[in-house]
Amino acid sequence: MGKITPPDILARKKKGPKISTVTAYDYPTGKLADDAGIDVVLVGDSLGMVCLGYPDTVSVTMEEMLHHTKAVSRGVKTALIVADMPFLSYQVGVEEAIRNAGRFLKEGRADAVKLEGGVSQADKAAAIVRAGIPVMGHIGLTPQTATQLGGFKVQGKDTRAALSLMEDAKALCEAGVFSIVIECVPASLSSRITSQIPVPTIGIGAGGGCDGQVLVFHDMTGLFDRFTPKFVKKYCDAGAPIKEALKRYKEEVESGSFPGPEHQF
Image (tube, rainbow, N blue to C red; front, side):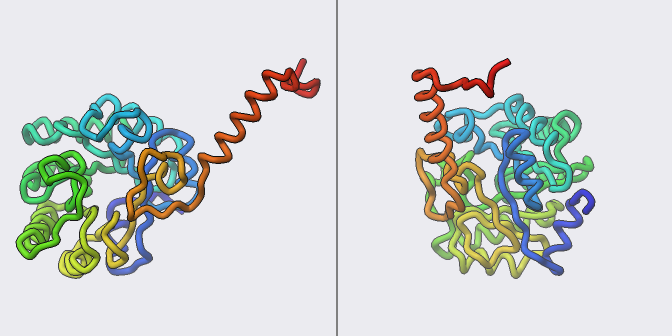
């Protein structure tokens, strides 16, 4: 199988199957996702919380995102690599948005970038696309502006908010994005948006009516235990056996049973 491209993802809107997306933040997680046949690997700014210990995604810098994107790109051969543009890397102006997006392709070896916001950021998305850089949109709950939205809450619950999200989706489509993440939105609204726009939607906490789904690697594998969103399904609890292995290692070091004769020269 060859390298997955943005046009391949766009074509899945009509041809299927649904699009599998997972985050990755380093070489081993990127390689694991790629080896498993995941379609899209997202180097999410969620790395701020699950890898760097920040309280939110706002604190993540361009240099941190580039560092992790480079690592992921070394482990991914087939999946489409999408890099999150961090807070204030695109909001300030079009020229800066293009320059920073270009760095993700040129330095990070990503295949595309993702930015948050609909109508308010459509001009940046359009400019980046015109510069030859594929863009994935992101509407609904946008973590970088969660405070402005009233916290990490479901979006689009009343008629006005629902119409606003529909306008956001249409503005991003007009800007030329190849797909849109919809986060924390009622399933019925996500399905309606999905049916009315020409690009694939990738849901996270947005129901099964989207054209694909995305989850955070550390959430779905039980490696992040600070909190677990309602929409997350844990496919394994990798944290528990790793912790147990570390405890056994500590005990064997203290008792002197490790290293044994077979581990020595």
